[in-house]
Length: 445
Image (cartoon, rainbow, N blue to C red; front, side, top):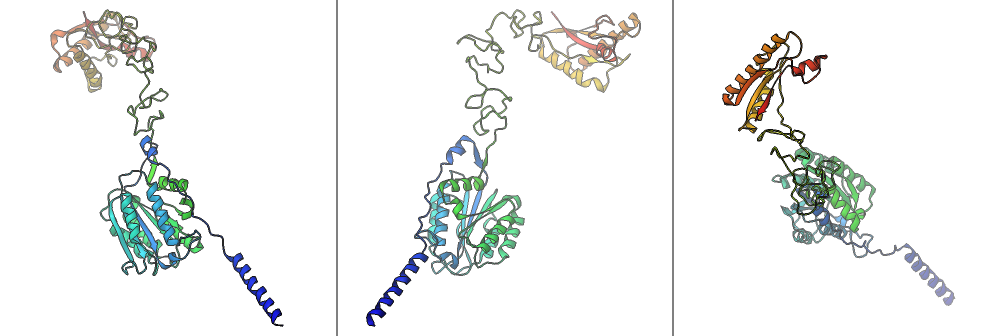
């Protein structure tokens, strides 16, 4: 009988042991973490800094002291580890940082919320040291008071701020949502709110999402999403950085582009400047002679310097007006340029509508100070030849008198009327006749 009873007791004990082993969840190791190098993305211009400040709120309440699913971690110690990983992943930014906690156990003063690191220049060692000061979790969960305190924490902040809240969201009501809306109203577009849920409490997840939504420009996620190197790099990019710009679309980010206004389609070098394949000082997009031998002097079109008979800066090979007077302003093909003054039918007096064109003539005269000019008057073909001859002379004289009043030496100007004898367009159309009613300048050798 005793043997039978002992045997039954042994079976019962073994059964309890098997049930205990079956119920105990396998111990997990925390995800491996190796920070991604985001500095290279900053240096390349692919990303640029988005925020000027960050403020971390760390939940150090009693619910955070419970064991987490990873070996040797509570929710509280795992949260601190996540913040340390964020600290490691941050690239070298000129940014200010602050750390605030709420809850606390016996290791900190019995305040509902404490500012551990006031807003000041961020360094990795400063943030790590601040986390070390918060060595235990306990007490209630006054997250509302922590969020409300942000208004004072950021009262002297300049620029934009990322508020990042780490919590399990447990044992809380809806009051922190209203507090988040209040500080959003206070700081507007200069504040975005991000929440990181630790654990999987459904009510906590809903609350954290509502807090982030109150910030309008932030988001909410789980600590598991950012525990790895890739996950944390993605988080840091979204919170602290934004994509750089390539304004001229040449493939070189603005930060590195030494030639920011490159026309679209032009091939550029690593500095964003147009390529000069033959090294003659003229970029390929402007070079009309792209294979010039090294050492050969070229003109502004990248072609070897040859004869420039009229001395206007355009080689004879490209000069369509080879006899331009020296000193005259010319266009790309070596022709003297100065737009004429147009007159209405049967008119010769200067009116305000002529001022822009006359200013253009003045610029031409200033560009060629050593030249004298013939002020030529012209008409369309309506009317008799003698009448139009007189009209063209009146137009030329009106323009000359205006130029003299504006400071041009009178001995540099000679007036001459050509009547209807030198049209520049057809007199068969209204538009053509309008162009023919003009006064223009011609350099005199």
